[in-house]
Length: 433
Image (cartoon, rainbow, N blue to C red; front, side, top):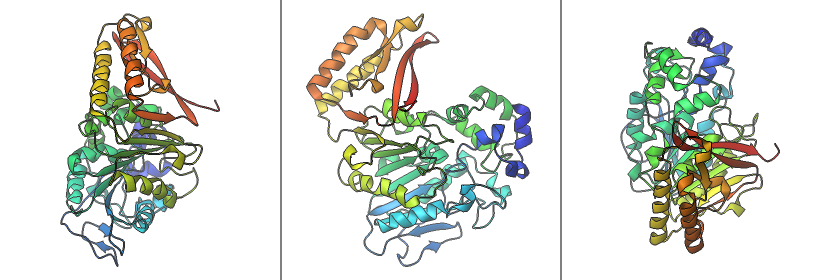
């Protein structure tokens, strides 16, 4: 594995593309971060590009608000293209963010897109791009945020690795967040899910390297090491339970696994404006593999936005086409119900702190937010009867807080005793398996 990594680290080797570690390091030759400063809305007639290659376009009529498009890991320009000559990838051909912006503008939104540091319309200056660690990308993202007019709703759409960098933004000021093919835990989990090395091996392999050494064309060593040190991404959003969040994830995503999608609902049970949508046969850009459909992605986003920035999200599942799986939080939860549900969840968390000796000491219990077993929690067997009683009584009194419509995949939760504590082990099963 280490030998393969050595052979694949150089940019000159990138055209040989994607065996072993560099394929893993490129957990999204797709998403990323941001750049620029100043304020105000550009002329709606023509896009304006400044020296930082930032493009801010608005519809001719009064805009609904502004959307900041945040890149994934690779060297993207403002059009969402990786301008590396000879790179055989859809990311080097499709102007993804430009075409998505056109569709979003047609729906009434201003859209801000940008080039990452060192990236221009037709080339990548690796002497600059190799400095894009987390500090550089997050500073750029904060400058971009300052460009968005504050008198209308401000929305952030982050793709893939870009979701890890939203922690740099004042999330209390953000009106809505869209996470596309996003990482809910950490970069190490995404890499391991692709068959790559575990976090400890990554640290051993790259800990002593030059931070500017490139891992393929996606990221420098410094950015990987910075991201390995970040806390789980869902924790960044935990303090903002009223922030509208739309998670979009394709089940055919080969870069960030579909298992990352269910973590948002599981770990943010208090978020009443969280909607998670998965699609079968959709890839890292929520498109059918081999197709290019940015307008279809915009149609996933704009109806939700119309609700999210004006009224609480309801995410009616009947509005979505068949073949989808939808997890949607209820629009309103009575304060007393919310407090009671939080108390039950806290008790379940404390139960998992009890020492266990084997898997037999751990059992599943009904989630107080939903009677659907796919959202069961794991607790110590000692507490099962009391917690099950409390959950069932809560559901009878308050009803389900969120609903799940499993059409093409099912989440199975198994109780396990790991390192002396009860933990959940989840498996995503497709219905046709």
